[in-house]
Length: 510
Image 1: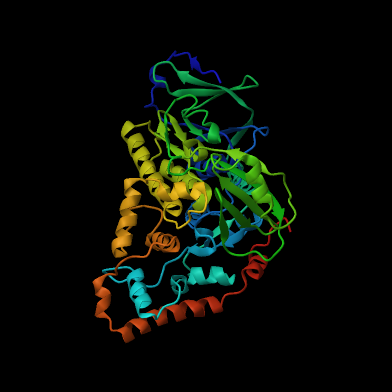
Image 2: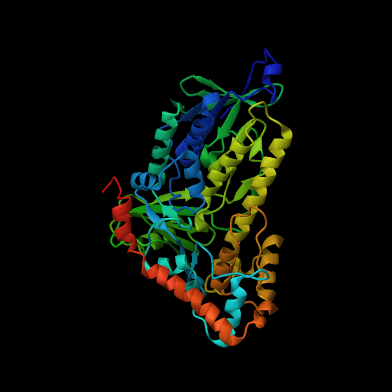
């Protein structure tokens, strides 16, 4: 794609300090239409928003599992849960089952919600660890309602309930749902392929998008939602990319949809294979399947065979190969361009964080929206917050690969022996030595998440916090037993997940 420079008849008008009156979103898909819906709904009265997309360009469209933070986005937009779930063929998600990750035949669940009950000095895991030494506990998931409900296939939305659930949904249908909202609030959609990106001669800012048809779409602020192509943020502005593939070596995925053959379960399945892992995401009328793998250790054909030999139900689509590189743009906001979604970087979908990162980019932009003109300090803060959040998520995903007992293939031996970021190594070492975990500021994953994955992957702390010894064994047994009983009672009163979905948010496709 050839870049062009626009004429500069009014140099002052072309600086980054002019008020932002028109936003141009390059690309549709989940990222583009989430941004369009939010901008038009929340800022649309004082802003012109234009989205450019081509029906000829497909989207990745496999980000079909979410995490509970999506509730925040839906509340901002006034979206009712039943409406979006019925429109997107959705089911509920209470966590992820990690199968064969610790070792072949060893499984665990990373659930939403909170483990047990903490005290002022230490987390619940310390009480559980002492209970384990005394032989008076069962698996740690028995002390978490969401964990137990996931295993038993139960779920309900109850009054005053904590929003510790997420969704499995059709990402393509989700984009269509959000498009309706954006159109209701005045979005202008332009159909067409982008042929050139124009820049101001004096500032280097983007001035417009030239389409194959010859049409020119000008704007003040541009959102790059062009996916892996990153046509604006990288193809034009050359922002730079930090490659994290030495920590996250998988670089390929194959996706296929199948007919549903059984009652839907309220969790995602992540099944470790010889050189990567397979996902299974249950929607109401079909199942999303795929395999994420490292091409250094597995060919596309072998990966396809592994996937197709391990699916259930009749295939509804042909297997589709997707190539990617894990890492992050060095700047997600550069000049007058903000990268949202895959154009800003990519962390593989192991913990279903892709849509969350889209949401966070949009909300952060709304909070720092440059209505009176772009300010460099705001850009720097936006990029710093994005970097901190992304690196925290990166570390959490790398943890699954690093802390493992698997040595049965070259891929898993590499993962087990690879060096990891110092920030992650510190967390591993601290938990291993003392059972302590922590959460800084606005980090996405809380203590319960780190505990479940570290213990699930086989990391056993060498000691617990001494305050636990203030409890006599009988008191500790009562404390632990009461928490477990309450979780069991709550779950026993929940209906079957499949039955609840059919009554609460039956898909429009059924």
